[in-house]
Amino acid sequence: MFRLLRPLAASVTYTRWLHLLIPGAGYSVWLFISPDSPWAPVLFAVPVGLLPGMRLAEGVQAQLLLAPEQRGRADASISASTAATWADRWRTVLWLETRMLLAVPVWFATVWLSATSMDLVLTASGNGPSDQWLVRGVEPHWWYALLAPLPLLAMLAVVVLSGRLITEAAERLLGPSPVQRLTALEERTEQLLERNRIARELHDSIGHALTVAVVQAGAARAAHDPDFTERALAAIEETGRDALDDLERVLRVLRESGTPVGQRPTLVEADRLLDSARGSGAEIDADVSGPLEQVPGAVSREGYRILQESLTNVLRHSGTVPVRVRIAVAGGWLELEVTNPLSDPAAVPGGGSGLRGIRERAALLGGRAETGPHEGEWRVRARLPLDGMRAAP
Image 1 (tube, rainbow, N blue to C red):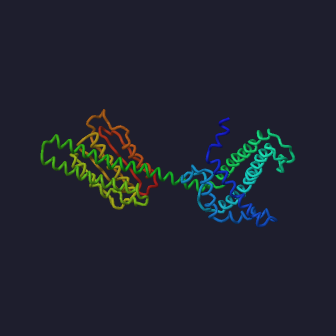
Image 2 (cartoon, rainbow, N blue to C red):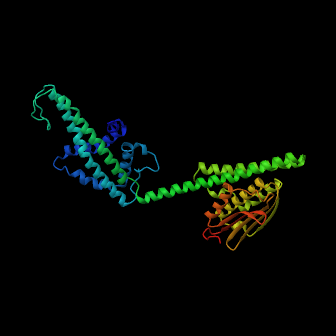
Image 3 (cartoon, one colour):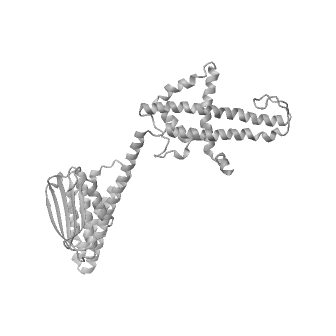
């Protein structure tokens, strides 16, 4: 019983009622102007519905009155946008016709059933026979008052049912077209990819800076050498400033969607990473060959992050050990290799987010990255196509 009465307590029931009464009000005005042509509004809805802006007006009105919970949502099932195609325009025409059709029973129930309920009350009070259509010619009796709520309940049932029907019609006829749904899905996918990229940026940049700072601070405390401590503090300061710059770039992307990605560091700035690792006490043997400045921006940026994460893992898991770094650009490929000895072969880095990030970056560019022990050493090897299209062998 309470389940049946629950719609009567929902505010959306009455906003839908208002939405259904609006066409009837316009139709009544037309009948007052030209009662001999009651069919004219039905024909007039065709050219009106073909106007691109009419879809926007109807969509906004439907969101406000039929489904207010969808207002302002990007994934709303009732869209509020102008008609982009002729298919959208004809769907708007069909929507206008459907809206007028469903307005008929609602107007009939609102006017006549409420009047019938009032007439039952008047008849029960002894005001004589009624002139209304349902109780015409009946004799007054007090028990007619017991029947007075029934027309009102029937009217509310018609309103609730018609409100649900008009909402479903709006979702089908005013909802986004398949092209719009695909576009929205693509935009959502781009947003998720951008969030994942930002998460990797923060992990790589801030993780590298913190690792270098921890290693430097530990080495300075153990060295008991003022000169070494001074160099360590200078390296920590420089690394911290670089991390702040990277953090500012990432936050700028979050604040301003139009920020160019070209502001992120590339492999041309690889010396900054190598010098930072050397300042932490690691022995870096770097071999760089090929024109790094000619590497495409996307590949160079991802290569920089792969190198950064590789050096961070070395400092975090192996400490200040000799590291061999090879960066080569040749034959349409960018090859990166970072190798360091394993101090304890039984303790190797796990499959954390850093290593997964390296493999994900390579895969997104159509390349491949391998991470793991190799002949008593830990090796990170990545091979990225410069055109971003070929699959790495």
